[in-house]
Length: 262
Image (cartoon, rainbow, N blue to C red; front, side, top):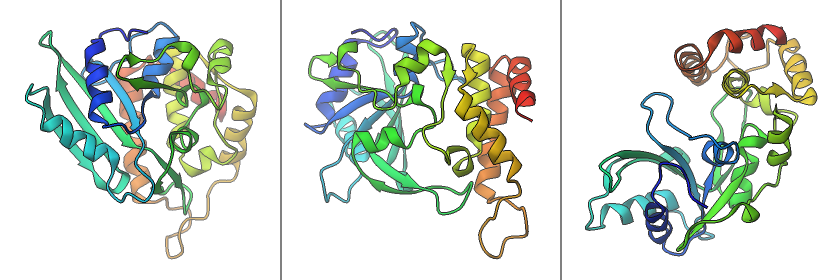
């Protein structure tokens, strides 16, 4: 299977850089491939891939960081820049394409996570690819295609433990678990962005979760916080999602979807 805008040899290079560790394409690139769309970074318009690489059990080093070091050591100079986010075991990479273009990669070490308080940053632990898919926002973003020396697997090898393909066919957005929105309220803005861009709607149980979660406001935050005051990290994430919604999406449709939730 070919990924539009991405040379197959680049995917083979990434698989080789994983040094035998399981590595997979996940998230929006898989979703858009199944929708016959080209997945790009919303700010720069570059091809944008999300990858997950599994670490060895008991290995304290983030597998994504190890992959970045391997790419950095290659003589072809393909890796131009990278930035590590150590708390989450992730790395942002910018690579050169043979055609002279650029591509962005977000490489995550497979992890599981939980939210100690509503809206707070998650606490993470390294885990499996299946764990990593289970922590995501919507079923349509919780699918994966494994990479190998031959490049990208075909659609028959799609890993889809949460029914994302069926939700694509129904053109619906479905949260992965009943506390998804309470854990991370930015998922509501993300739902509005996807609804506007893709023409999707909230699944009935997800729309009910939105109503239930909003009705429970103000939530109980950490002890010592003023009543109703959210963690500072949540405000930063909400602002970023709002900027994307207003500057890079069909915002009247997105706002209409949000209004319908109130």
